[in-house]
Length: 203
Image (cartoon, rainbow, N blue to C red; front, side, top):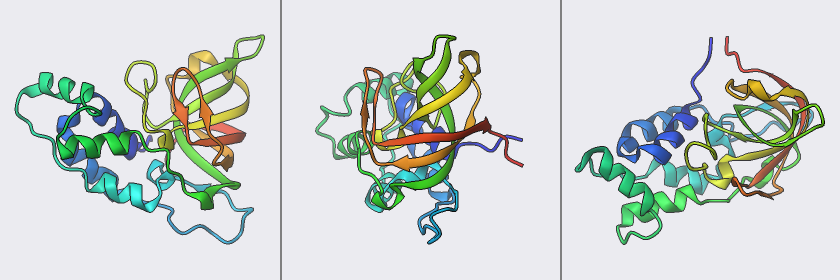
């Protein structure tokens, strides 16, 4: 069975319908977090997306105020467009979270396993995906605005990853670094050299 990517659900609603802030922020708060890393650096650490957030950013996310429900969905669209220009403190808080590139330095160089969706960046001669952004929800950077940079991972070294599989979530395993990557689609605060890609199935 598939386990919901909780913070992914939270982020996509932030990007497309911030009027549901209270419910989704609560779900993210309840998600498990690998805040204490194992001393053995050969051990693969299974991460949730919230685990990429430094403590200060996680606290900001959990403390985000509920956005007014007045005005319906149209108001939600206006909120999205004005996150960076509004004088409303709650909108500034949303903008701060959605633009953060802060990272957890202790994750640099660690072996990790994290689930997510693929946004292709580079292909080989056979049109297999060789590099991509890993994101917590489907359609990020393409159909809806990108997540914050610290919720995007640039993945390189992929092999035999067919382009028609991007609609499915995957487990991505490899060495995580805090190297940044800038692209027309988005900016990432993390990078990962992939060792293994497998179907995201939670049992």
